[in-house]
Image (cartoon, rainbow, N blue to C red; front, side, top):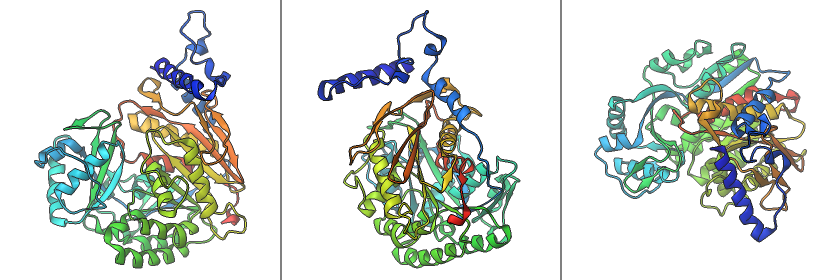
Length: 495
């Protein structure tokens, strides 16, 4: 399999030679794409995926200064995971053309939005406005053969991942009902103010790579999430969360759930966002805050988060390719003219947007009052960690730890199984698309490519993509959590 992938990469390079001249292949790649030969060295016969996996294991080391207490809030729920196509068929819906909807008002809206994202192989999350219709759909989902219940919500999923480290104490604040409380790791502390009588349920419609419904065929495995979730939508646990920090005294705060407010309507989110910013501003200045973003569609809401509200007062953000592009589109950043990514996002374009975020909304300028110094970007084929110089350490380990957990968790294995994954990252790329960026390449034996632009350093590593993923929900949360565990804050005085 890897020889086919390598041959395809060579063919692409050869075609490029016809138009741009033919640069020599990096020597570190040639040793892995030579033809099979019994006289070849053992290393040349090893699969690229195995070489990368082994290199990750040697690169991933815990930082000298580690977090001991992490507070996470504020969205939590129970996820009902089910076959998307199967459930929609059970709801007597027929396949047809796709159409995106910012808010779902009916089963037909659900079908159209699901098809829209399935044909792109992209993840999305939407609010379902009709409470009674949602309850009927949720009941059908729970009764559907093979449906599974899991811990859900970004905060709860991040908390669960952090709790796998026994020396790390985790506080989780959010709407925690009896079913969710029962499912949480025993190591997680839930303040009494977060407990409620009823659970919030989110429906996760999954589809497999190559799965077909009517004329729609999924290019890759992914999921479509929807809910009628008022507690999380209003961030009702935020004040309880912030009040709990005084006693818990965390050395890192992880915040998520802000994306759910946009489905509540402009009047509500404008007022609630101001209250949220006031609450977040009460967190001790020397405590770094990581904000986990998620799917959004309202440009005004995203602009409010970016410019005058949340982003300037957090230290770190985590986001995927859809959220990155939408953030640029909403703020008039680089490559905002793109309607969507075509295939694997171009590394140079991603690098341009990440730099713009840290220059326009972060502290890349020493005179800036913004706190943002770190952005963790993840997409299916690779991850990039961009940090302002002088604030974070151990970032090569952090970005590779995030990539490693993406590979293993998607396949449902404790460690990366090279036979179950494949390399989809580009072998050659540029550090910028807008400017005259440096030509860079992937070295499988040292799979972290590093470049600098101004006072921002970028660490990029490939992802070994699971060929037959068992579950895609929560991968982004696991990636961000793992990246944070391996990140080291140089000086809390900076925040």
